[in-house]
Image (cartoon, rainbow, N blue to C red; front, side):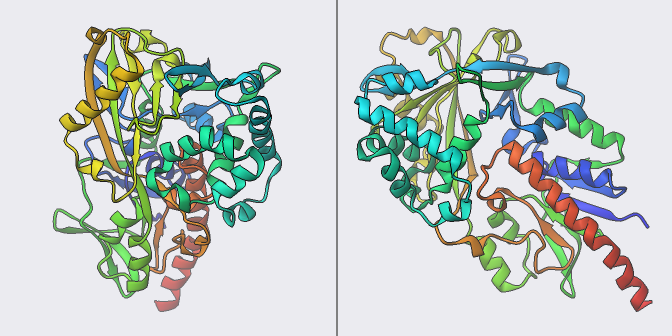
Length: 446
């Protein structure tokens, strides 16, 4: 008998789940509260051009993402590009791409440059992530790189990613990033290969959703779930618009604290576990320009007085023929849960950001700025403090036939499309194990 599964959340994990479940012969309905699918990977339209709300990285080694592009039939819109990154230090920009750049990086002395390169190499040979989880990230970096490199390079990067919470994170966070980024460096020049999709990251979601629809998946937009309905310890459906829709199982891809609010009948200890999961938010203005600002895809910033922590010019990856000639720059600031900047108005953000933008780029002609658009999100990057592996929520929840998958659960991997897509497969595999048991339970009671 065909099983009908409700998937809550239409981001990349939700759509991936829908495709994989439908491929196993299940009937799937996806509920998304937004106007479009995509979640954090959704888009905005400007002057007839579809643009990513937030910047996203797809690497040449991201095999699961490449497979989704093939499934969605969008490989003809995929392009690989060599990108560059740099550092902004004391008013100057420096290349930071190859081993040669490491060895010539002016803000560091020769010994510090050598130790920085050693850190990158060291990360490739460390394979025990459980060991990394017990080591403070600062201790791990200082041990190999030294205090000088930590202060000049690593500390600014940690501040950029984790705001005031950097001191509590384990070494896994930098270790994972170093291993991921080095995985795309090819040949003696160690050039980084990234790819982009015409019309933005949403293109892969759009293609996959089209394939899902052909397989019988139903998508409901502007459809916020009010409650996951639980009877006798089992998820029996969802409530939407005051009406209960019955399902054989429910899979949530929502951020853990959001899911907690939908489970008034779940065990109290499980709800408390979901509620305590911590996430960083983000303020991420997009500046639309008439001309290029920097020669890099990402310019990391060491100056802690600057509120935004990087300058990301995605049109140094994306050909501007696909952006109507506009150059797209993102100025992100990750926010700890108690950071008051989360409450700033768009105008406050623009005023403060532009003050420092002018200091960084004093010769840039501001008449080239077309728009300054503030994008923001509350649940972006989960934080896993050291020694809390036992606090990661379970894929198979204490509520019978309620499953969950979100970025909190993919640790120690990073919360990118590649890791999320692979985790979706784990959810499907668990469902496939459990479905025969549902049928046996029905026979036993009949």
